[in-house]
Image 1 (cartoon, rainbow, N blue to C red):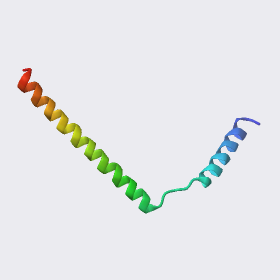
Image 2 (image 1 turned 180 degrees about the vertical axis):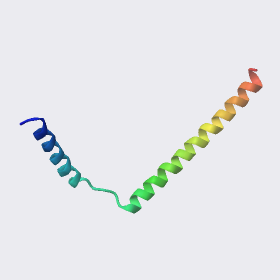
Image 3 (image 1 turned 135 degrees about the horizontal axis):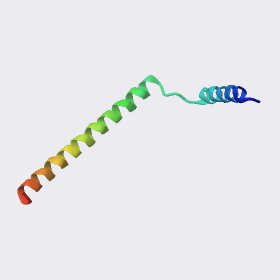
Image 4 (image 1 turned 135 degrees about the vertical axis):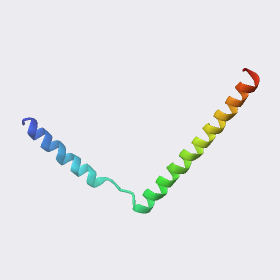
Amino acid sequence: MGIFGKIITFLKEVRLELKKVTWPTRQETIKHTLAVIVISLAVAAFLGAADLLFTWLLNTFVI
């Protein structure tokens, strides 16, 4: 079996495995996407607040 035969076999196996995948519904995808966005915004807000606090502390007590 040459290189092209191996590639063909690989692609056939990939296709078979993709048929076994349980794909999320549209509603599940939207729900999980919104969860990721909300968590990302919360982490960004926390890190921004921590940065402001540490900047203020450094300016007040160190500099």
